[in-house]
Length: 112
Image 1 (cartoon, rainbow, N blue to C red):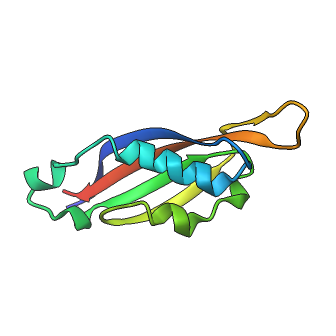
Image 2 (image 1 turned 90 degrees about the horizontal axis):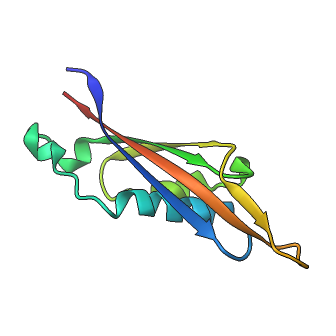
């Protein structure tokens, strides 16, 4: 058998105040995952925990993302997180604060 991508889920998350990259990344992954109910494993006789999930987070200052906190969002399977430059940092007028947007892509793989 071979690992094959079965599903690609995408989402967006924000930190309205504070510019916290991890908070925005966690919210982006939740947005990607929480609108779905994956039943593909049942169709190929595999437990939901057999899946592997490759998470890509696009956010300003990707080095500030706590990858372990992002992985805690995954309800099943095992995962890895890669952070890349992207998203948006929108400055607030008359303030040093920003609104931060992160994007998440979660690719789900099964050994089929």
